Length: 76
Image 1 (tube, rainbow, N blue to C red):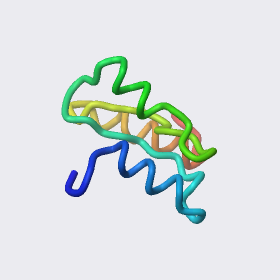
Image 2 (cartoon, rainbow, N blue to C red):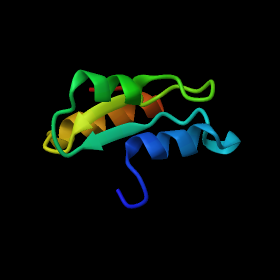
Image 3 (cartoon, one colour):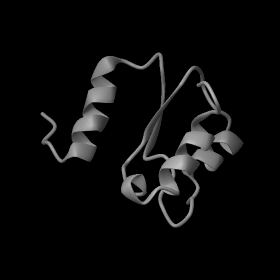
C-alpha cells in the first residue's frame, strides 16, 4: 500500500467520523504472524480493528462470503 500499510489505513478510517464503524477486510500478501494480527485486530479510537484478515491467495468465494456477511445478505 502506498503511504502506509493496513494499520495506517485502519487508523485513518477509525479517526474519521464518517468511516469509524465500517467493517474492514484486510487482504494480505502472505500469512501474518500473531503479533501483526493482534495489531490489526486491536481497537482503534473506540472503533473496531479489522473485521477479517484474509490472504490474497484466498479463493474468491471466501471473500464474497465475508462481504455478504458484513452487508447483511444471506449466505447460500
